[in-house]
Length: 337
Image (cartoon, rainbow, N blue to C red; front, side, top):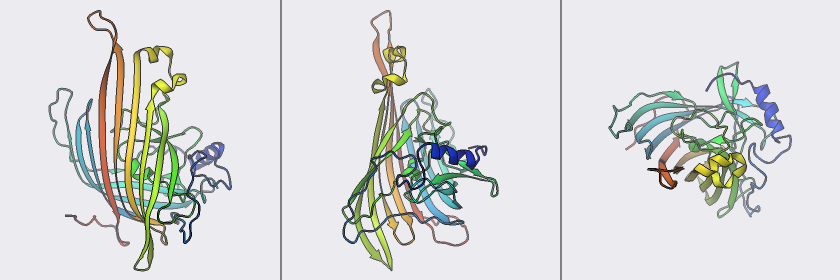
């Protein structure tokens, strides 16, 4: 992620995308995102961002892939989420905040195979990485940090040029869930949509794809229970998110020659659960799983015979869990059994 985009451009583009003052819809979320009717003793779920707020999460990730690529990766890290403060742009739900997110890896084991199926040397290099959520990011010159604009429902901002989020590597761990728009109680459900792109460069995302394979990722969430513990009001949340891109159903995005010889199908399915602290406005624990499947079909004539459809399928399976670390000096995440 390069430090070339300044906020003034980002803010103007976000406003141009329909995120004007007073909008109750999160940036980048289409109309129709809704919550349940306000029940008795309902609670409003909102992230409570503040300038210089630092949240640190103990984070574990596993990723396996098979098909055109084969990988098996296990990762341990500390997620550092620093709020650089509010944006002047009044879009989004309750305004937008500048979130600098860094994944500081402490352990990493990645196994791969070459095209002949031969296993390659194990990769153990750890990195400090900013997640690849979209190209809708800004740069804080004062602190020399990149940031993603995010509103109080956890909906990350988009712009007129960056019109969708990326489903790549661990991006779903940050994009999900989007919190409900209305107050909720135990048993409440809500829905939201995220415009996304899931490219075949899933493991090594290189930016937004101009070919038109974006699609809506539809989230359905549920409040399993609301309870108190040691003076805190906690909400137990679960969700599932699904979306499919099929080039056959987007004739206007591709040429007739493409449709005659090729077909692309991208499928995303994700589930997750989280514990949300209503008073502090933070997620204290979260885990999730996702499967991303890429199917490429080609109409090929072999040995001068009639053209027939052939396909390749690549599956990526992701699971993660993270727990909020106590406040205090930065330190390595505690060992887990």
